[in-house]
Length: 389
Image (cartoon, rainbow, N blue to C red; front, top):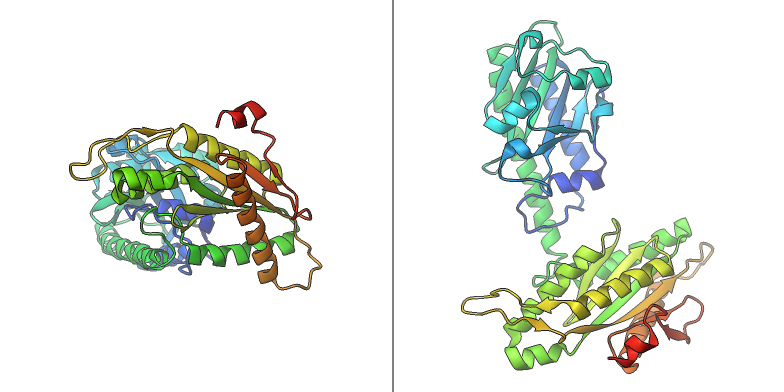
């Protein structure tokens, strides 16, 4: 029985995040199932021993296709599962040639083919005899290659096989584009239009889910609540458009700093931001909060033109952040509703943030689990630093 393999969904998402405003792709559409179905159909079109879908990495993609890598994201056939996630330079092999040129390629006998790259066969203990490859497009751009290896009947692939695969590649491109569009439509409902971060509605969904997961795993979590200090000064002195651009840049910093795979970064409203950090210790959460605080304090905002006839403002030393960090230690035996845990955690993080405000702003205050009434400034902030603010 032919087995079809693909990358796990979290890894697949990055390969299908293409010119869609950097949207995440985590929705009900099953990417791995879509790709396995594509290979199943390719197998039905042109029965073969094995086949693969390779895509370039949009996070590393450069204009010169020759300098990109292709990644095996879905495969079928014996030993093919060992290729999943492997990278292949676009400078190598028949696959690389098809990706570079954007034209299909047929090799009836790879032993006599100057473009054949034998190292993949050597790596997985396979013998390729004949191969057919066609480019995969998303929109108007070549983004990868669909390849089939060794016809099941032992004969070389034919021009008819290549024509059938070209027709099928059009279906593949259409299917991938539909998956992208469906995910994009779903994601737009979760996003804050200004910053591109998640909105408060989706944040509340994710916080409930994260705390429910924490009860099952028994692992700590951290909630960070952040409010910008002196943000009104930008609006009052430079206008609301400048303030909006500053919020976009703050959102960019948060996305860059909070890199944990299952974290959720959201704009809570106005100039408030929240971050859910599942499977995170208090010390790890404090370190992230301190990096955020220090980054905002040191950053210069609106350093480039930010609109029509809007010259750079170079706003340095204007914005700072007051941050509350609330630790959550789950009780797996608890019979209380998760929503109760959620409300208490939100209140603690919010109160810690306001405590940071009252202590002079531009600092991190901690709320430890079980010590709701005791909120302390982060020890990472020295007394000298506090005195200088």
